[in-house]
Length: 329
Image 1 (cartoon, rainbow, N blue to C red):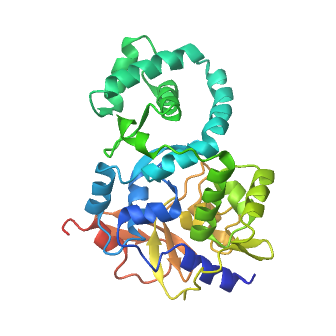
Image 2: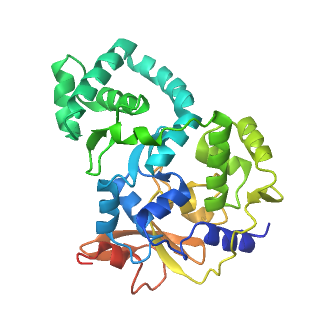
Image 3: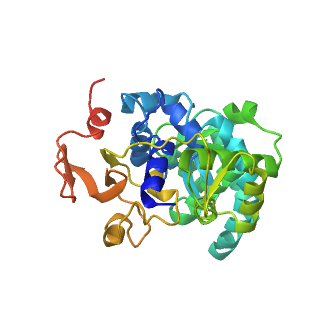
């Protein structure tokens, strides 16, 4: 597949020029969106929403139309409640297995997790609590109340369906509201649906791309693609849906750090020139906010003193960030 065609198709699939009406529709379409950095998550959603508004996205979070949780790759993602258990069916046992080795190296015994889970469940029964409040209650039963050990106690509570993030930053809530969304889908059924979501929203993409994004073994992915064989179009190593619209690439956009535009793929060379690799992706694996023109990254950007500062040589007068960052609706 030619690079120009790949860019046109991904521009259509990623919906950066064909935004949705509501924030939860964006998250529904993508299934799961990187959300380790909350502010960047908000802007990634806004970038694909008509009349982007921080207030409307915050409202969707406060109403639990969108939630944040440790979904896969050991990373926090934004998702709809209905997709929370879909992802659990795919990743629950696998994530626990991956984390157990890390917990063993940290010296956290299973009995500590059992005590922590019981305490966190009790505390959250009366309503959302901040990390500081939970740390204090954890300290009260003689468990670590800071740093990596505390973070792992909280992450394990999420993996055990005790808690997820609340709308407010660094605040957590119990999972009672999620119970109606539980699914009886099998692993293969859930994975097939996840494959549909990925290739609809991010295709054309390769097995290696999905392997990077999902963290699943290639043998598992190949089986899933075989199950989707009547739905997907294959062009060389690339798979996508036949209704993916080729979209013209006459645009200049500011996209978020960790945006799905880049993080969805193992091979980002069609979008990210080699000379910008280290500027965009740090040694620590952080993805900086990017300036994208006609499907290709031209530099990075940040906001300083209410002004957009960027490293590209493009003249940018107004941006898609302006409406999102506006103080009034």
